[in-house]
Image (cartoon, one colour):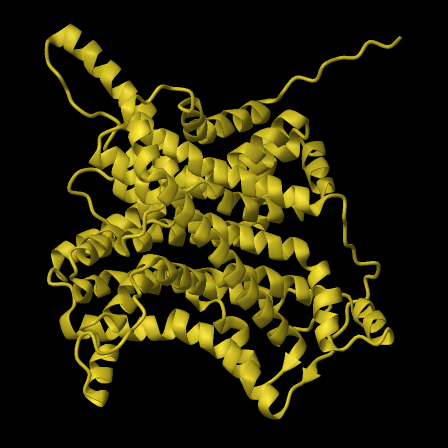
Length: 551
């Protein structure tokens, strides 16, 4: 019998495992605290607020999931398969709400729809009403939060659904027509089943962002797990109870993944033809055409145009009172953190993807999957999982230093920009990893073999062969991480150093003090930066169909 030799990991394999271990540390810390006794505080939370956290979180998840699925899928089908006025405009404009953080749209609509806002003032003047004479929906409520979050997050579903519809085979549609299927039957019985993985992926992204939401729900006074973690940690000073609340929130994430895989079962939907031609379009006319235009215009208007106009008006009327040097300092902090985090995230994504390419065993595959889980974990959970071990390290270092010198040096790692950047990398590494892995996968393995034949090492091959080919994808990955960091709020609030504010924190603090007009300046700056990836995504999607000539 031939002797089976075990294959040892290369340096790239060990490096991949090391990166995955560092990125997975916060999650492991949270899970380790599940069995730690929390004392009476956990019993108090269970008796008073835990049920409310659970029900409110479930309501948000169900409402946002159904809303984003309906808006994203319906609008994607319209812009791909139908011809109506404004179609070319809506192809890319439907993505614009991605540039608006949820807490920003919450600030804008609160000022617009509150009792002292222009809408209710106009109603009172027009009908002669006074307080108590009429009913008006309260925007600062659980349904209001669910509506605004849906308006911001539906582009996740639209983006993936449109890509899936663009990749449809004409043969599949021809078969449907041959069987007598009309447009509605083609949509429900052919297109949606084929696009199911993409739709599930888009809804999953929207739900992960919903679980991560902090600014809007806290401003609206809605109790969820995210706000509960923050309140338990900083309001009650109970890190164990906060970690266990974070573990409950993490259980939501795991449950969603398991339910999706169980619902999928063994069903698979595949294209049986590579015949990609110009997709046939349903020409809409009359009322149907204008209904399609209205259906696409409404979410763009309510989710992007109107909030931006409101913020612009507030900024011009009574913008941030510290628009000078202090505001530039906030902007500089945001830009610096985002740039450093983006560089590190892209670099680690290259390490992980290239390590998985060289070492294709189950160990490295598992490691890369673990490292890419960060995007599914809310920022507040990541923050708690980072603070606990780093606070322990600070205590140990202070004890050692005090034993040697008799003095205490204070915080060394906790409360510094280091752990804040670490949290950003853990949270958004998956964004850069997916982009880099997809780009690297398009490079044929024969190029690696040719480079090694010419005497290049694995590192030299990456530097001289792969990196130039992936330059565009690396830039896109960096921009996406950059913008996500600019918008990130819960991890920034929890982990930022003392007297160190970013644009997101500045907007949140002003809004919390009911200074919405002043918060509009920082909010507009965040939105302006967020438009960059939207433009890149729209350009990429327009050329995404195989065999489609670019316009």
